[in-house]
Image 1 (cartoon, one colour):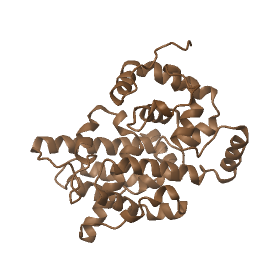
Image 2 (tube, rainbow, N blue to C red):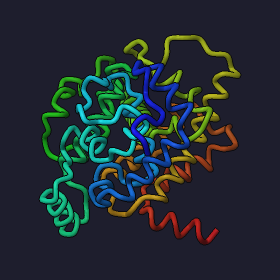
Image 3 (spheres, helix red, strand yellow):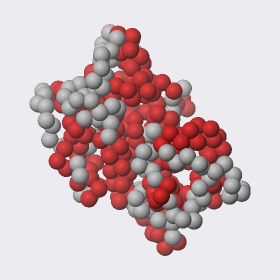
Length: 310
């Protein structure tokens, strides 16, 4: 591929989004080709799967904080930028994962001995997505997420990258224990939609995004500060049901050893999700949604077996 193929002229946020929109098919193909030539275990440690790698790299390129001035001088400023998997791995993980042979060997040894991704990488993944969530929600929601995931964070041990949020685990607004349970589930649900890039998986996600991933007032219900018609509320609930279905599908596609993702799924595997999102007992889909939520506690392999049986 020649260096002048599809040069990137406009590096503004809108320009980068337009570039992706115009060239997505070939960009995804280039990323796929780059991954085939790249170290498989290092790529897995950073992205977990090839499909996630494509979504993550494109989202990193389209992120507001992405700056062309921070690219290495030798980095191509055209569509070949997306073939530079080593750069995207390092950029995504804040340098936690490198591609030198010595580190490749260490990653392989760690994977074989523990059958899990390195804790530093897990923490980097959690922190970067928590930072993204922090831009989208009120402070109390971050506090509820930290409360909901205390066990996971303890297992990963303390981290400088998460200390910025240490003072946010106290909730400003006092609510009942029942409401706390609901908001912890809500915070975990919002986080997981970002962590799994659901905005790229189906077209009507923006109905959820415009209500629950907008930084409104820091008070219950912690949603966008706008009035809704009954029809609009109905649309949002339909999207939430679709998201639950998507979560179920995604969990069934991951590995049993993906402890981080499985822990995040478990934090929303409860009926409190349906309560906080007003999918009440009169809703004919409630029982189906509840069953799918409870199954998020299961091993991915067991979900695959259930799908094979049906």
